[in-house]
Image 1: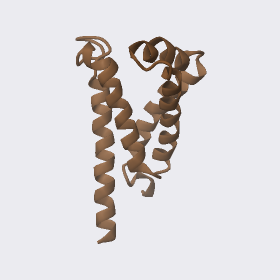
Image 2: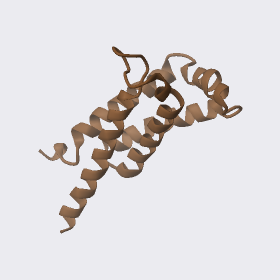
Image 3: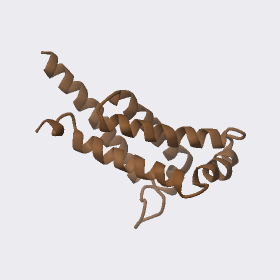
Length: 133
């Protein structure tokens, strides 16, 4: 099954997560602007908070599409890893490990997404090496 090659299931799952998160922020009102104004600007990114928020959301939409079509996969995964790390540093780390249950808004979800993205990079590199051999 050709479509199952190159981690299609992982790329699909991550793309769905990033798209649903990003598109929800775009189409449900002022979520992106509020994140920029009410959070990013308040923690020291003023006056660029809204610009950064939109850059993050739009980059996640673009990289999700690229992951789905298996183009520029390495750069797409790196961009999303950097976004996730920034989220852990600015939001999730101080909330602890658990997203729900043992805590709230923690970093466990970001951790597993980073692990999946790293798996995509590593296995794509391995696939390229075996294809070229």
